[in-house]
Structures are given as C-alpha cells and as structure tokens.
Image 1 (cartoon, rainbow, N blue to C red):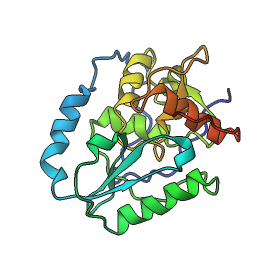
Image 2 (cartoon, one colour):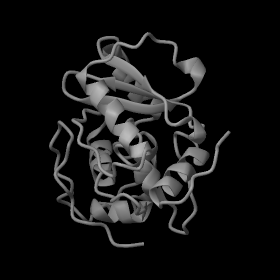
Image 3 (tube, helix red, strand yellow):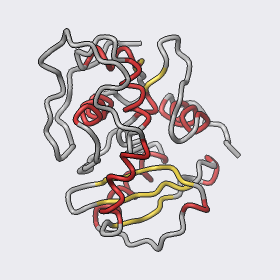
Image 4 (tube, rainbow, N blue to C red):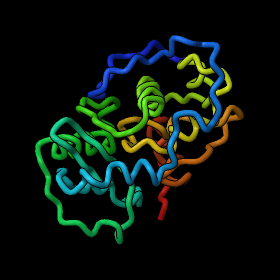
Amino acid sequence: MSSAPAASRSLFDQPDALLDKHPDKRLDERDDVRPADQVAESRGDILDDQALDYYRPPETAALGLIRLRASDKGLTEIVFVGEAEADETPRPNALTDRAHAQLEEYFDGLRQTFDLPLSPKGTDFQQRVWQALSTIPFGETRCYAEIAEQLNRRGGQRAVGRANGQNPLAIVVPCHRVIGSDGRLTGYAGGIGRKQWLLAHEAGEIPFDLG
C-alpha cells in the first residue's frame, strides 16, 4: 500500500483546506460527524428542486441502479439503490447527463478519473474527508489510518470511517478504495459485494457477477 499522494485540486464547490492547522488535536468518532439520517434530513428540503436520473451499470455486473441528483452547483448524490427505491420520475439535466456518460465510460473501462462539479452536503470534517478520498488514485487503496494521517488527525480512524460511510457521491468520490489496516474490506454503504466488485474492476480483474 503506497503512501498518500499530495492533495489534488478539489472539484468540490466548497474550497475547504484539506489539512488541519492543529495536527496535535485528537479526534474521536463523535467530533464533527453527524449520523447519516441527520445528513439525509438536512438534504431533504432541497431534493425536490434537484435534477434526478438513474444509471444502470452493465447487466453482467448485477450492481443494481445508481441514482444521480444534481443542484445548479453540482452533483449532490450518486448512490446505489434497489429497484423499489427508483420510484421517482427522472428529471435529468446537463449535469446528470454528464455524470451518466462518465459512469458509462468508467464501467466500460475507458475512464479512471471523473471531471464533474460536485456539491455534496456535509459537515466541515466530512467535506475534508471526502476531499481526501478524491486523491486516492484509480487502482489503489488506502486504510482509514492513512486518511486520518493525511488530514493530520491522529487517532481519527473511526471518525474517518464514519465520514467515509456517509459519502453521498459513490464511485466519483471513491470511498470504496478505503480498506481496513489489515487489508480487509470493511463497511461500505453500497454493500461489501459492490465494494469488492468495484475494486476488482479497477484492478483489471474480471469482476464476478453479484447476481
């Protein structure tokens, strides 16, 4: 596992500094991290005004649907959903169309990085974690401790793990590339099977069929 690279220019609409100015501050899982249901609730009042579309990965992957949402600033949600959750009428716009096209290239093996404006909603700490995730190169992984170290947050692995699990922009902000320090595939909001499939895809292996 290689060391974390220098932070690249963020695609997020909130240009928060990636590194904390107080590296000696110890962070535990309670600091500046809200439960996922509270984050979702804070987004709920704006979702009705956002563009919405669905992308279906190749049938051979059996990954289910990916729901895309976008505000006028950027993409706010890219999440795996079941068929029963895809009950809203699509109302796409140029941003969801662009994300749809780039996801198709990713699954076809033609794209390793994304060029999309992002506007996720979250706390300052979550934003910094998600920015750090965006620096993990295609085909590589990092452990939670490495992300905490990149943020100069000693002892912050569990808080990083929670923020990682609350990432609303799957694949594009590659939370699936974060694994346990022992190499195990730990929690993933989209399910461990999908995480394993995505890592196999990026490693150039023939991904298995989740079905």
